[in-house]
Structure formats: structure tokens, C-alpha cells
Length: 462
Ligand SMILES: Cc1cc2nc3c(=O)[nH]c(=O)nc-3n(C[C@H](O)[C@H](O)[C@H](O)COP(=O)(O)OP(=O)(O)OC[C@H]3O[C@@H](n4cnc5c(N)ncnc54)[C@H](O)[C@@H]3O)c2cc1C
Image (cartoon, rainbow, N blue to C red; front, side, top):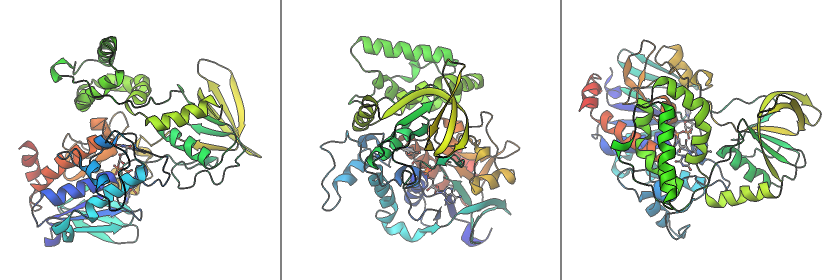
């Protein structure tokens, strides 16, 4: 390995996960470690979640839980209160600020507070198209031909979005409503938090036509309330039980808590410290059943809307501007005004159709990594450096975040953080989980000397 690559960590993806990891690496490692952060967007720290400029697109986690640093829980709240000439957005940390502000906060971690270590950080704008392991070093290539060599590389490429069909409008683009006839019916596929964002944007952009949000169950996310997590001891959690028993136990816990005047949210939040272990020890057949049958229920209780967002959505439902539909889309055909959609309502056999001006795919992110359009992820598969987990929800990683290759061997040089690792952890899409993961991985990586990757194994066991 050449000298410059021997203490050089390359992070691919400069969204929240990549920035959090870079911050932790710079703060936890020895001064010899250099970090290169590769991001294809013009800005770091934003990614899919925090690039929105719409002030109605607020966080779905309260400020109090959104610190980027696990050992400083009020870091984000303090940052919000320390901005020159900008008054605090709310009287206390139980509030949901625009996600754009959160992107500013994440970016500020590397622009303002690295201080003495900033010379060790290089931020590169570019699209990573290839990652390979060669002669004991990792080399990373960008679309424009630039190439970087390091002793380790970490994929933080985040959420992969679904590719659009000709009738679909991209829900993530900055102006998704601009090409839509304001009087035409619009079909939103999916009824999760992406749909909630889009309804707000459509209404704000002056859309007058009906908005229909369709998903198999038609479930809408619940909303937050000012409640504290109900403490659940590790010893009482039935780790390793099958999904039916687990859900029965959880429902019992919720019923008992509510019978005493408590709120179900406290129990769901109280389970959070245990969810990764629950997933790890859940039998494979139960994981599958969870994904097929219980996941939609879990998601609406776990990933909740801010109360002010709930008020806007309730108003849209009440006034008939928004309709929720439990149905399955069967197919689409072009029509003069947009598309004809054929669908079947839940529990019915009859196939109906409706004409819409646009379809916005809000089913969220691509869960099957083999369907990824991301060239960096694809190159790992093509080179046999990664493999898909059996449930096809992520790439396979070790509990330490090492990417597992085609032969089933965890890499000593290639790692992943954030949503890409959901197969191993399941709950690894929100900041409270990602910040711990990044801090833990940085602590391990900081102990590796680039000349001897086998030390990672020892460091992992330390
Ligand atoms: C709409 C939405 C709202 C959310 N709201 C919240 C919330 O309120 N609170 C919360 O805790 N979590 C929220 N989340 C969860 C969110 O996934 C995480 O908080 C976090 O943003 C994940 O960050 P990430 O960096 O892993 O992924 P991403 O945000 O997807 O970022 C990945 C980055 O990698 C870059 N990239 C990808 N491939 C390449 C490549 N080949 N070359 C170069 N760059 C590349 C992308 O451009 C992107 O910037 C939300 C998610 C979404 C989608």
C-alpha cells in the first residue's frame, strides 16, 4: 500500500450518515488519519431527507432526539439557540423544525467545528461509480475519472429511490408539482410520510384537483404527542421469540400501560433501545412474516408525524381534498390528460379504473439492493465484494458494519453505515440510531493501522 493510502478513510455519500461518520473519525482518531468525503450533490449533510426547501417539510423526530452526537444529547438544541440573529424556533426542545434547518446543522458539523482537524478532511463533489479492493487497498473511482486510494472505505449512500415510469413524477425533486395540471386528480402511491410531504407541497403550490393516496392497507402515520418513553427492561423483552409471540407481548404491554392512563406511544418509544437486538434475534421466518404482515402497522406507529403536520393532513381529509384508499394498483395506460390507472380495492375482486393527471410514487425507497441504480453499490455486487441479504432488504453486513462478500466473508476494509445496513439492524434509518452506529464504527476504525487490516478484527473484539 502506498504511504498516502495507508491512513486514509474514504466515505462514499455525504448525507447525514457520511457527515456523522466523518465527524466522528476526525474527532476520535489519531492526527495521521485523513478522511475524504465523496458526495454527488452540491452540498453535504442534506441527502434525500434534508435537501427540501419547503418549510412545511419538518422533521418527524422532535429536536430533543435529533442531536448528531450520542454523548451530547442537547447538541442540536444548543446549536439552534446559538445561531447569530436567529431566535430559537420554539420555547423548548419538543418541537419539529424544518428539515432544511437540520441539513444546515449537519453540514455545520464539518464546516465549523472540526477546527484543528479540518486540514485532514477533503470534501469531493462527484459521483462514485466504482469501488474495488486491490493489493490491500481500496480504490474508489468517480464518473469524471478521478480516483482515490485508501486503507478503508465506508459506504454511506443512504436511501435509494425508486426509478420513475413515464407517468410518474419524482417526489424528491425540488419542484414536483410544477408539471401537474392544478385541476387534475393526482394519485399518490403510498400513504407514508413521503405522501404526507407531497400532499402539503401540492396544496401549498395551489393544487385544486382531488388528491388520492393509495396503499395496500391505506394506513396513515400516527402523530406525536408530548410523552416520555416507558422504560422497558431488557430482561422482560422476549428476545428470540417468534413474531406472533412478540407482537402479543407488545400489545399486552400497550394495553396494560393504557389501562393505567398511559399513551401507547410511550411503549413504542420505550422499546426503541431493544429493537436492533430484537431484529437480530428474530428467527428468519419471523422476519419475513414481519415484513409481509406487521411492518405497515409498525411503521405508522413508530414513524410518526409532527402534530402540526397531522393538523394539515386532517384538514385535507376533512375538506375532501385528500382521500385515502386501501387498494392495489394493477396497471396504468396513457390517457390524453395523463394516465388511466386500474386498481383493486382491498377485499374486493372488481378491477376499477380512474383517470389522473399525474402519479407520484411515494412508496419511498428501494428496499431491494439488486434493484439499486447506484453505481457504487452495483460495482460491489459486480466485483463480488457484497451480497444481498436473504430478505433482499439490504446488503449483508457484520454486526460491526463490515460488508460481507459473495463468499460470506466480512471485509476488513469495506464498511457501510445508515439505511444500507438495514438488513442487519432494521431500525437504522433515523438519526438516533445512525449517530450511535457512526460513533461506534469510528471508534473501531480509529484503532486500525492501515498497514494491517487484520487489526480491525482485534479492534472489533476489544
Ligand atoms: C423524506 C425523509 C424524511 C426523513 N425525516 C427524518 C427525521 O425527521 N428524523 C430522522 O431521524 N430521520 C429522518 N429520515 C431518515 C433518514 O434516512 C436519515 O435521517 C438520514 O437522512 C439518512 O442519511 P444517509 O446519509 O444515510 O442517507 P441519504 O440522506 O440518502 O444520503 C446519502 C447521500 O449519499 C450520496 N450518494 C449516494 N450515492 C452516491 C454515489 N455513488 N456517489 C456520491 N454520492 C452518493 C447522495 O447524494 C446522498 O447525499 C427521513 C428520511 C426521508 C427519506
